[in-house]
Amino acid sequence: MKIAVVGTGYVGLVSGVCFSDFGHEVVCVDKDADKVARLKSGEVPIYEPGLDELIAKNTEAGRLSFTTDLTEALEGAEAAFIAVGTPTRRGDGHADLTYVMAVAEEIAQTAKDYIVIVTKSTVPVGTNRKVKQVVQKANPDLDFDVASNPEFLREGAAIDDFMRPDRVVVGVQTDRAADVMAEIYRPLFLRDFPIVTTDLESAEMIKYAANAFLATKITFINEMAALCEKVGADIKQVSKGMGLDGRIGNKFLHAGPGYGGSCFPKDTKALARIGQEHAAPMQITETVIKVNEETKRRMIDKLLDLCDGSFNGKLIAVLGVTFKPNTDDMRDAPSLSIVPALVGGGAKVRVTDPQGRHEGEALLPGVNWVEDAYKAARKADLVVILTEWNEFRGLDLKKIARHMNTPRLADLRNIYSVKDAKRAGFERYDSIGRAPLE
Ligand code: NAD
Image: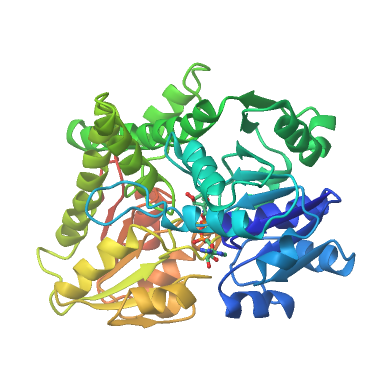
């Protein structure tokens, strides 16, 4: 089957490449000519483990190509996936649907034969019906269906998540569209991965409900961590004891500096907005958004305390700026609020990240980038671990402490312990939800 995927970002590129690996003929479209030129020349514009090999394999096999030209992509295609961004709209928290609707209209004006227009972008309930209206208005003669197919992949593990999903969700209105979607995902059907087929609204809702639930779980444990610090409990032990309960599960129970990334912040805000618009307030989600902001602020207080009340004149090393390991994505990363607070407070900040520099340079002005943690920590007054890259999990802490001005460590991912820090010669160590070394 021939498939067009519009938008070659984290989701569109991974989906398109994986569909081609299923054996489909896939044309990926992006309006960013530079991105398409890079992809055509074999360069991968984002960092996602394993993606480069899969692109090379499927391009060589003649199943995968890239273009800026929608006409070429839609020629003979039975499905067109919309995988463009749906960022938070300025001012009201609503998901900005400008890009989705623009693509829907372009597809309507370009497609000639029956096609399923599939929304993969995360979109508020009711969007697929609006897409249908936009397409009908732009091209009343076009024979088409719409389908909602939200994506659940995690950056950093995107290919494995796409190839081995917990489930695929497909919202449709007709059997014809359901058949096309089943054909696309047939390799997953054959391997018994569950496909949940629903109406359009339920599919749209599943994505927001899932993300809001996960954001709630993270925020819950972060709030518990704040209490643990006051009462002398250890959040790692609490998480373990809770997570072993099969009804709770151990995933998303790691305390940290607050959730970030390209999805949770914008999707929780959008869900809160959808609730307000339908007079069904999402009070839990609204509180989660608020508590997450407080969690991020609490991190600044922690760092301030480790700097004896002032960042001014201190040399601070920040390890990791991406919102999580194994990605170069910086969208809504905790570093974007923490690093400017350090710089704004008068600190000299050295930063290192295995993949974040390319994005981070523009987003974090006034910092010095260095190659590794050891260079970052030299003569520093404080080292802050912000992202749990593998590179920072096995550090020679003794070496780090020995070369620091004042050996102090803020471990905002709970990678190490007071014992590790003490043994390495740190004079102070603080983490999340555990007693500090002071
Ligand atoms: P992204 O910003 O990385 O990519 C979007 C791409 O769309 C860009 O390359 C942009 O140039 C392109 N684009 C925009 N308008 C276009 C047009 N008219 N024609 C062609 N190309 C166009 O976004 P992303 O992170 O891949 O997210 C896409 C959607 O998937 C969002 O709705 C997001 O919420 C959802 N999602 C993202 C993730 C994730 O981990 N990133 C996971 C699940 C769902």
